[in-house]
Length: 353
Ligand code: DP6
Figure 1 (tube, helix red, strand yellow):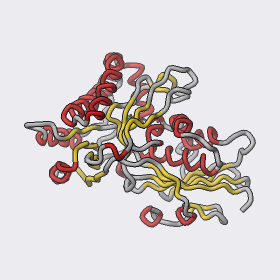
Figure 2: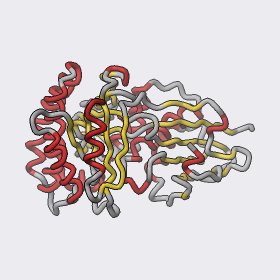
Figure 3: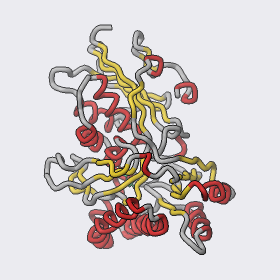
Figure 4: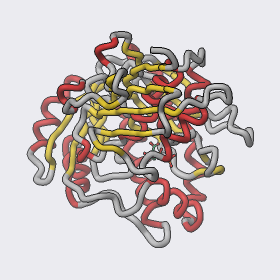
C-alpha cells in the first residue's frame, strides 16, 4: 500500500526503586532528581501498532478497544509530533492493548508510550538509538523513558536546559539477576483523586519536606546502584521500602495533601514487614496508586504471594521476572490495525495479544 507506514511494538511497565517525582521543566519533562527502575517482563505488556498514512485526516488513538478523546490522546500526539519530521506530516492511527487488566491502575502510560515511541520510529524507518528513543518517550510521560530498556534502568536527570542529557541508561541487563521476582498486588480502587502529573506540581510548589528529599535522593540512588551491583538483597530491600515511604510522605506534606495508599495498601505493608521479621527478604514499593509492587527472590516468591493473596481487598497478585525490554514484532499478523480498511482490528485484548 503506497503511503502506508506501519509497525507494531511491545513494551512493559517499569517499577521505580528510586522514584521520579517533580519536574524542573514541565514542557520537556525534565526531572528534579535521577531515578532507577526495574522493567517488568513480557506477560505484563502493552502492544501498540502505529500506522502513518497520508490518507488519514487526523491522529486517532485507541486503547483497549475504545477510541480516546482528544484530551486522552494528548501524550500520544506529542510523541507522534516528535517522531514526525516536517517532510512526513502524515497523520497516524495508533491502536494499543494492555495485557494486564486496565482496571488494575498499573502504570500503563509508561509501557504504552514506550511501545508507541519504538513502533512509531520503526514505522517511519528512523534509525534512532535507545538514548534518542528514551528522550522522545520522556516527553510523552517521564517514567516511560525508562521502559525503553530492559533490566535495571537509571534515568539520569541531566543538566542541560534542552533535555539532551536527560535519558535512561541500562545499568544491568535482565540476565544479571534472574532470581529477582516482582509481585504486583492489585488492589481495589476507584479512579485516582489526583493524577501523578498534578500531584508532582503540587508537591514541588508546596512541600518543604520535598526540599529535604531532593537533598538526599541522589545519595540513595547511588547506594541502590551499588547494592544491585553487589546483589545485596537485604540492604537493597531496606532502601527500596524507605524510598517508597519517603515519596508518600512528601505527598502527604503537600497542600492540599493527597494519598495514593489506602487501607489495603497499608495492610500489604504490614504483611511484608511481618514476612521480614528476622531478616529482610522482600521490599514493598508503591507508585501513584494503591497497588503494591513487592520485590523479592524466587525462593520467597510463592510463600509471599500466598500471604498477600489472602489480604482482604487484594484482587489478584501477578508475578514478574526482570524483563528484557521492548521489541518490534516482525510478523504482520501481530498488527492491531486492518491496513486496508485503516481501522482497529476487532479483537478483544485476550485475542489481540
Ligand atoms: C510515582 O511518569 O506518570 O510512578 O511525567 O507527568 O507523565 P509524568 O509522570 P509519570 O510519574 C511517575 C511517578 C511515579 C514514580 C516513577 O515511576 O518514577
